[in-house]
Image (cartoon, rainbow, N blue to C red; front, side):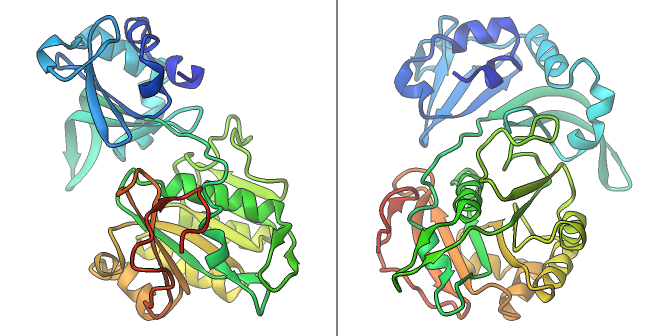
Length: 335
């Protein structure tokens, strides 16, 4: 297991997880830590509980149950012994740590004016493992190239949670930044200046502002910056040719997207959903679809594992791939 994951866990949990079988460790997606309830791991759509010796079992009665002390120590490690300094992040229900791993929180909240003010008691943690998957964008990128203009299509990547959106967008940024892309016309596309607005610190996994993942040689990152404000900052001061942003959906995101497009910047963004019909139920995204802001929609799912490329559509909603397009992103162009 990666050191960046182990270092945020108390020793009692480190000892258990170091004994994970290699076939689970290599595919690990989540570690679910719930006070006085079975310790669980999720991998490639499957799950197992873990005994005190790190042995995966199906029966929850055999699993190790994290104690109150385990959870208190874990929170101290996640917040570097200063919960107060992480209150802003925690109000959103998560903490992002070095390595780009996001830790979801569960427990008792205090509410003020209808909004979460603070977590009063935290009794559950979901450690979501961030992984760099080189080649994840290989199957998708050919659909995003606008050959006549030698440009990229404005693209929205859509999937349910944990189906590879962030992994895909990270690798697309790398490929576009490096450039030297072979075109079907016989030419090649040079690298572009890429700007990543990494509000949740998951795409780049920055440590002290420096990306941990390889995002290409022509990429700049605004780490921990709100998307709408970050996109405008990028346009004003960093002159990107392509802006990458994760999980859009708020009114201010839509306005910033329009402004960036008017400035001639290409956009690649992600959103939660199961497809175009699902997106159209969300008012802000429905407006963007109606305005045909995006000329490519990439839909991911989990039919053959996280990151399965299920379909690509143009801005009119016409499918560009075959009816069955179920090859995990990172393989050969499937259709």
